[in-house]
Length: 371
Image 1 (cartoon, rainbow, N blue to C red):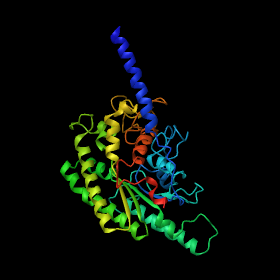
Image 2: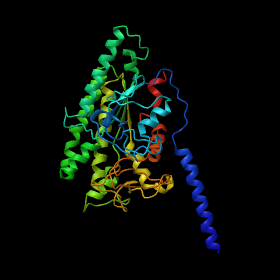
Image 3: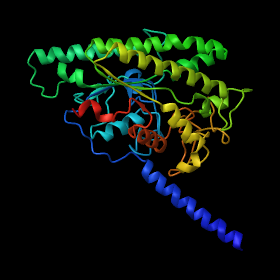
């Protein structure tokens, strides 16, 4: 009886701890210190695509994508908001509209999103590789400034000074590494491709710098080996203590170290620029390794997919396709569809980003608009 009583009180204690932790972990209601209108230009892949694939290529992204927050599909590969959405929210600015969305009715007053599902750094000049996204930005800026010079009465156009003060966010590289493994490259062969990936990120930053950009926010890549898609498709690989594919995560960490060094090097070369490197890998791996602490269950199992435990992923029946299974609303899962994270997980990742604990240098997210 005493043991039962202890177990019950311990359970209540853990529940209260989890609730308190979750309240503290959601995106902080930080009062933005922005003195200027925040303008953000985002470049990347599906981790930050707010509808570009749907707008640009007409691909269908069906419900239950978007069910949690928007109550409809917005083209985001999640049940709700992405990390970039929460970061915009912290600045009290609207969510970024995809550059290719002609029907959004946006004047792009707070920037634009060039990220597209499936994007990588290589090969170049293939829609929508990183260099294509940067070319789109260059066109966007040139056309914008043409209208300003022509005396347009549109008060919301971004001026040359606005482009200079804007924040340029980059979150790409995951697909490059995943595609290399998908080509049956060995771990060593994949690692050898990493410098060519980071060179493309360097080229993108330099081009944006030459276009006047001075504020850069660079995310490293997450634990690729913890994605249910990889765990379902890749067989006979060594798993780490938390059930993730070791060599996939090792390759991601090698890429991240190369990217960290690149950011460090570019700070010395572009002394009037601010380049913030953010360790997304550590945030996401901690979320998986300590999932119960954050109130999540089955950290390696997709909420939306097919096949049931342990991963609920079937490449032939993915989320939104006929025959998919989806967990109940309110079920706290980290992974949404085998590759992308749920809104609940994205919220916690964003709160960690905003804490500055994972950023080098440790600057507030609103640094670019607060002076």
